[in-house]
Structures are given as structure tokens and as C-alpha cells.
Length: 155
Image (cartoon, rainbow, N blue to C red; front, side, top):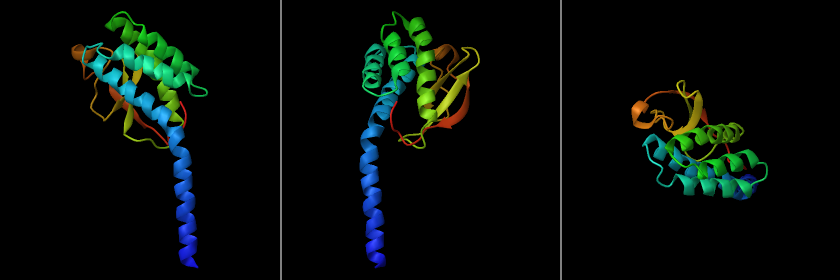
């Protein structure tokens, strides 16, 4: 009897995880692209930034309630230079931080970092500051505010 109860619990947990997995995909995919952008800007590069931002916009457009992310990613995708990209990265970061704050767990360890000089936050992996707003000039400027993440559902 105990064996059946244990199997039932395992089956229910497995079914729940299968149902949650498709919902997790949009946020995780957007975060993967976002981290590519954050890394490029911290390295004083625009390489891959427009494409990654356009992909975030596309992912967000397909997700219910992700209009702010889609709009901000679209603006970033059209940035003409690194300064414009860095400015457009601020509201995109704010929109994605809001999305992550509603989550309980997500693959990877994400942190909200803040730069007092830029007066803006961003998401990064790990606790070592890699400032996307000033790049090499002030790569270590900023502080970790808090860990982010949760059970990814929708953007």
C-alpha cells in the first residue's frame, strides 16, 4: 500500500513538472539572450546585440503579459550605437527584473546588480560585477542587490 502511495506521488510530481516545463521556456530563452546582451555591453561590444534583442522581442510578443519586455527589446534591437544600446538596456533590464521577481526558481543563478553612476539595475549571472552601462571604463562599478529567479512561467 505504501508503495502505491509513493508511486502516485511520484507520478503526480512528474506530471506537474512536465506541465510546468513548456511555460518555463519563454522566460529562460529571453534570459539567455539578455545575458548575451549584458555580456557584450560589458565588453564594449554591440556584436550580436541587435539580433539577441530582436529575439527577446519575438519571444515576449508570443507570451501573454510580456508587452513591456517586447517593447523595450524592440527599442534595443534598433539602437544605432553602443551609447544608445546602453540607454535602451536600462528599461529592458527593469522589465525583465520585474518578470523575474515573480518567479520562485529558474535554471541558473541570476542577480540584480545596480550601478549608482548609471542609476540603473541589470541582471547578471554570478556575483562578480560586470557593468554593461560603462564597460571597461567602469567594469567593476556597482553592487549586487539581490538574487533573482523563480520557477519560470511566462515573461
